[in-house]
Image (cartoon, rainbow, N blue to C red; front, side):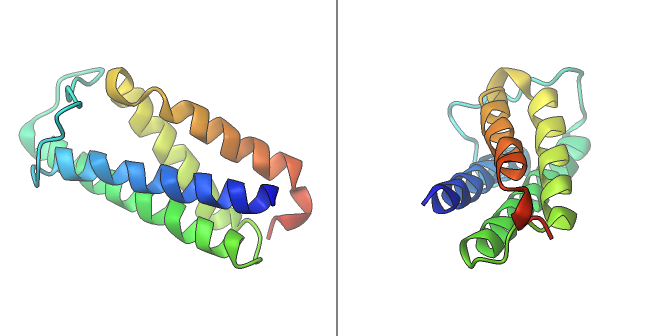
Length: 118
């Protein structure tokens, strides 16, 4: 049961990253996102960063599918997802700091269930 909950948390965290993609690429402005970054970025760089939000979302969703199907943690997918996620969160701290909690839960899950690492 705990693994299913963790898999769902991973999937939801990934889906929330899609908000960053949608907002930063200009597809749609997310009302609650200020877009304030640690340092100013150009419109072009902002769009590129948006694609990193999407890439990170995909990594998390794929990771959750592996976990929910009983295939364990695929560290080659999970580690980049967590690293990219936390870097994006730090860069957009004002809007995304709560994502750190999700990343900590995910990392904790990896340590709690080390036998599922592959």
